[in-house]
Amino acid sequence: MWECPSFLVSRQLPSSCEHESMLIYNRFCVIKLSKGKRRLEVEGNLLSKSTKLSDVIVVKEETVICDLLISQMHQSDNGCRNGDQSNSSSLIHQIGRDISINCLLRCSRSDYGSIASLNRSFRSLIQTGELYRLRRQMGIIEHWVYFSCNLLEWESFDPVRLRWMHLPRMTSNECFMCSDKESLAVGTELLVFGKEIRSHVIYKYSILTNSWSSGREMNEPRCLFGSASLGEIAIVAGGCDPEGNILSSAEIYNSDTGTWLSLPRMNKPRKMCSGVFMDGNFYVLGGIGIGNPNVLTCGEMYDLETRKWYEIPNMFPARNSETGEREPPATSRAPPLLAVVKNELYAAYYAENEVRKYDKERNLWSTVGRLPERAASMNGWGLAFRACGDQLIVIGGPRALGGGVIEVNAWVPDQGPPQWSLLASKHLGSFVYNCAVMGC
Image 1 (cartoon, rainbow, N blue to C red):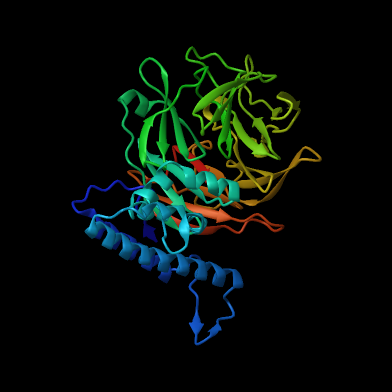
Image 2: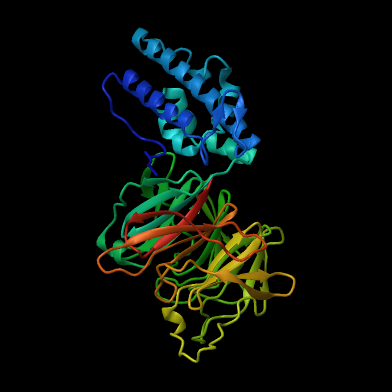
């Protein structure tokens, strides 16, 4: 398991060329030796049977990029000593700027901090977000999980390369630290919504600068809302206003422009609901309405093309109390734990310790298997259930006093029941306060 540096690490180094060059050299030598999911086993000119052709191609691409960047490191060293930075705009001199960018698009974004330290042009390419915009256009996406097990502390985890990164600590007052918070990852930003003494606020973490800043407020401040993101846009719906009134309003956020735009209102006001994107449309499920203490069973779909909401009766039916046990009140239960993988909707039924799948044609839910055994929760709180690329991710841990271990489990949905793989564990505490997945 690697403990990774930040995506963009600010370094203050005297005569930094040599130091930065060594950072690049060391980092990419590690990449050259580590082949992602499995090592390439080579004896003479023969590859082991376990090696896929795609792995060989990836290895060759990484090796070529590594060799070119090491060569660039030497040239940058010489340029720094001679006071000449004139050729830095071409990035990797031997192949030119366009092909250089095409190579960098295929590097892991966890390596961009080291790449940015090579020279000013590399730094500008990453810090301005140009590289991420190009990745989006090329359909190159890495999904990272961001979660908080301690107030104001956030971790990120790459479930493919099994790498951790600790984010800078959030700077806020005690009121925000103790308030209810929601989180949302959109574009290259992680948004954390909460409340300070007199108003609702949004804090924004950017992977471009590895820093927190104040985000732009919504047109209608709210908490306890449903939300989901799709690329550079996100939608929030419902929730409560500062006076505690349940809302039917919704807004869309564009991370490229940093702006909020009000949408048409939902058919029913609701708070403590959940949102997902599926088949290019936004869905809201569950939640508590006005004048009814029970969870709403209807869902709503917002069509981005027609800009209209459509109600779906019985899309999220109430739980069956087969054991006869009295259910806790709806206000004490977590919003529905939902995730969409390959446009299929899944839900974690924590009380039954089950994973269920939604049948869009019949508007029914069916049980597909069990949740990881050690993923405990308190009425659904403290457990993260998210889609991460083609995987379902469950983050949680056994209840423990005074701390504990958090575990990251993954399953790639197929025709069979869930077979959960333990990807990683870490001493962070066993309760997940907030969780979001960033794909960029």
